[in-house]
Image (cartoon, rainbow over all chains, first blue to last red; front, side, top):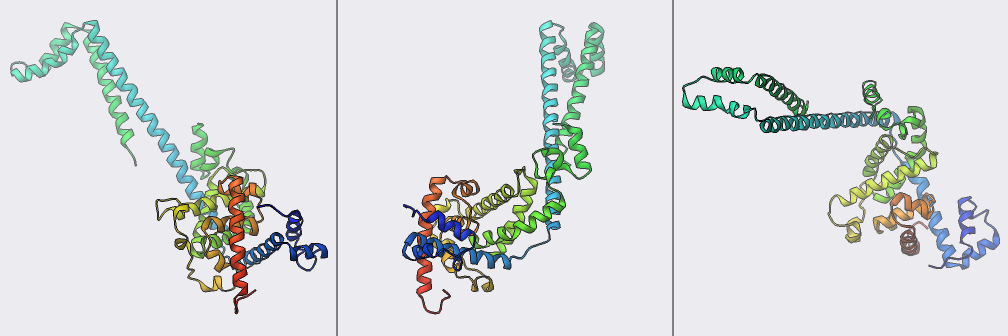
Length: 172
Length: 195
């Protein structure tokens, strides 16, 4: 892999297009005798002539077409990026709603308002068949006024959650 | 992210300028400047792709895709030389993806016979002295030889284009050069061949 000392000179001469007619005679003599430099000249001339001919054969399209395709792709990418960010925001809102609902539920349970059991009352009533759901709820609210506020809050949270889920699943 | 900027970009059809500003090529390249850049770069790029792949039709496809990706990506802004090198890098990656697609293995593990090119357009090859020798080389060797001897890129620039290390390029290029020079010599020695 040891390079010849004349190789940079040969390379510069080739780049300037001096080979073969405008080449320095001494350098030309050296090229005839040096294997490395001869190889370099052989490859450079072969590749450069091939490149010149291949370039002439290149079927080139109008740049406007490429520009138009790039515009379309960029727009598509931008829409995808915005859609991805919106979906993330929806999921984040959904997660916050769920966390808020669970926190409220646990807090109320610890406070001992007894409303979790009230929520189950209509179900028990339906099972027993003696009391209607509306009567049960009305009785529950009458015994504890805070339950009305709590039920409203839970209702709002459920509504918001449903809206968030709808938007998060809306891919169109 | 500045949403109003992004959304206004989308509605006006300039979405990428908005999302990728200020590093995008689009911020500095207008349709006219791109046309000029395309005029100067497309033919050398096509020649590179056609010679390395040995397939002019594939070269057409990859060249278009390279330019589209170039326009969509955040390209270097400091001059046409860097832009062109970046374009060659995209094209090289596309070529590598193309070679990798049919087989899961690394392209280095595949036998050379697989890469022997059979060009459909005889006209494309008929005048070329280099084509038969290039067709017998490994794709990576073709790539390195073309970049070094046809495009006159330095080892460092080839490293940037191909993603290989400079010492590896030096070694691979040394071997490839020796191999193709031997083939060209043999070819020149055969009767009826252009010298």
